[in-house]
Image 1: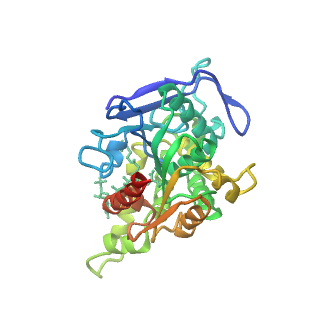
Image 2: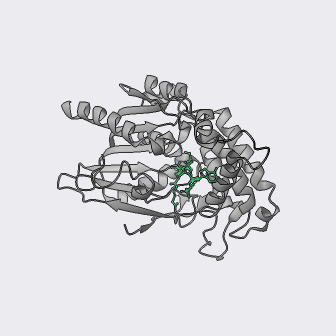
Image 3: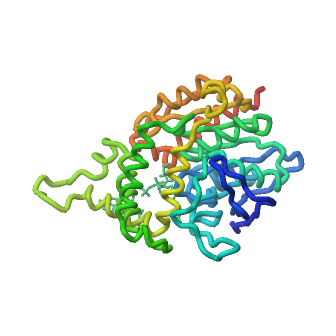
Amino acid sequence: MPTHQFQLPQPLLLENGGQLAQPEVVYQTWGELNAARDNVVWVCHALTANADVADWWPGLIGPGRYFDPADWFIVCANVLGSCYGSTGPLTPDAGTGRAAYQEFPLLTIRDLVAAHEALREELGLARVHTLIGGSLGGQQALEWAVQQPEVFENLVLLASNARHSAWGIAFNEAQRLAIFADVTYQQNTPAGGAAGLRAARAVALLSYRSYQAYGRTQTEPTDALLTDFRAAAYQRYQGDKLAARFDAYSYVALTRTMDSHHVGRGRGGVAAALGRVRARTLVIGITSDGLFPVAEQQLLARHIPGAMYAEMDSPYGHDGFLLEDAQITHFLERFHSLTYVH
Ligand SMILES: CC(=O)SCCNC(=O)CCNC(=O)[C@H](O)C(C)(C)COP(=O)(O)OP(=O)(O)OC[C@H]1O[C@@H](n2cnc3c(N)ncnc32)[C@H](O)[C@@H]1OP(=O)(O)O
Ligand SMILES: N[C@@H](CCO)C(=O)O
């Protein structure tokens, strides 16, 4: 699908102070808006993904899938701070021509929402049938549903939370330390920090998978090895894979964004904020998710009025939200069939 570009009509004032002067958001759409304008599905992506949701969530989005473009008008926009087209640390400043790199300002989840809210207004989408996101995408979706309760009819949150946990922040900081230890990060060049990013992804993988998943896929078939273990090669491979498609400055920026997530900030706490949601909500947890554990999902479901909770039994850990298409489809079918009855 072609990528569209949207420049916000005015500077974006950031929650932490400062502004982005001319922020741009790239997005993609699938399908057609129907005459009643009631078939909009908006997908919020996770940490390292992009606007091409049909590419990274092919089990859910596409012909014959649950969200089939023959029926739905599907929108996915890249978040600010990313390196996939929306304004981020490597974007040249319009005035100086120089990118911010390490100096890129802190963007909170609320700033990400503000940019996509401006896009929603630009597209004239008064109502969104389903807002869905996992992990950081779930944080964004939740914050948006708290801010704009009248806009979203259905909200689907996967492997996410109301406030980023101390555990999650600690994992993110461990990854950032790996990047900061790479001297090329200080050089402020597009490829700076690549070795650190490779290590950071290897650390992150430990929080995205599970003991069982490693045991199932990375255990040696022989007991003769003393070195060169399969699991070690997997860590290196995954680090290389991310370093080839992402950049360290965006990674630092977006992990800080994730750390900032707290729907209750300035709203009298998490429970009060969640109580503002008006969308019919489905929260999906993953039994083996050690990064966003099921207790966090249950808390969401407990405090969002009328929310339903479903738990996926998966060996994949946190990344199960990207991989367990059949289970997610099953839960969506049940959830939406109830929606239509009302
Ligand atoms: C341009 C773009 O890519 S856009 C962005 C795409 N990514 C995103 O959107 C972010 C979200 N997606 C993800 O995080 C991931 O893609 C996931 C979670 C969905 C799937 O992760 P994967 O890495 O595909 O799965 P998994 O953990 O099973 O690893 C499989 C890969 O590791 C390789 N591998 C497995 N074991 C080993 C090993 N012991 N040594 C070396 N390599 C190994 C496999 O060959 C496979 O390689 P491939 O990706 O080149 O095919
Ligand atoms: N695997 C996800 C991060 C976990 O949500 C990503 O790379 O975006």
